[in-house]
Image 1 (tube, rainbow, N blue to C red):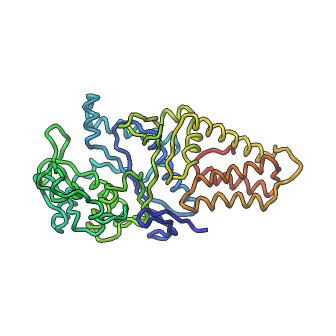
Image 2: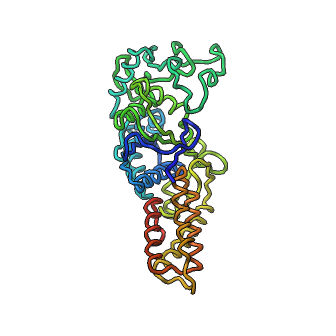
Length: 406
């Protein structure tokens, strides 16, 4: 079975065929570095870690870029709260994020570009789009002229008319010279208290959408294979990225758009603004990286997941039971007088890879691991069958990034 990926742009699973044979370019939207990573962040970056691990297992060479938004309003507000230099604050939480991801055994990206390293690239993008007639300057802001593109709405499958339902005379614009509701800032002027850079339009900062469009294009070229992020980024962030990138290059910017659902806690999306955060660090301290990975991967990435400490502890117990089963079986210590049938073992092994080929379905893959453990609780595995079983479990460990007891 060939790998199939659910593409947000088409709303269906598609057979995966990279732009360049044997190579996969991946861009994931990284965190805004003003606080510690929470469990929702952990789920996001863990999923893309397993995606990358599986692509490597299939023999692909990967190039992974994950940005840091290291300067924006949230960082500035938090730096004021903590009476801390905003650049120091951002560096601190970049380091803390990487520390948490390392503990969770998330493979490092090949490149971690930062917004503040690409200010002049963003200015050049704004200048280019103004020259092309798809952007305009208004009182120190530069806006993308949304009606000038047919690409807007590709990911949400709606037209401009569908998105804009309010009459323009009822819409309040912060900038009176902004022309349309969906026109978004490529460059925005800043207040005196804000961190800013000189530009042809006065002091300001790049718009959020501009940053990712520039960094993805710079490090992965005009067309990448996979662009990933949370579902909350589909609109307007990723829609804006599409129109910026394609206005810049004239080419399709992303072949497969992949979006993961968020984690809820008490029925609400886990976020700082809701005050319902459980940090990744706290969860890691409670059960360790293997159990947290196991817990978060047990739900398909496109389904919402309601977090609870009780279910996390149950997942840790289930993982420990699996580890004991595989450790005993592969050491030849499983009691019983009957050998496991080769056909049933092969079926269980194939179920794991069939699940992963079906849009990285880690939930079904983990069920296949339980199915295999259930056989091993009742039957012995000897000789060549044990060697095959060991290789399969080693593959599972590498792909899922956790220990199964061998």
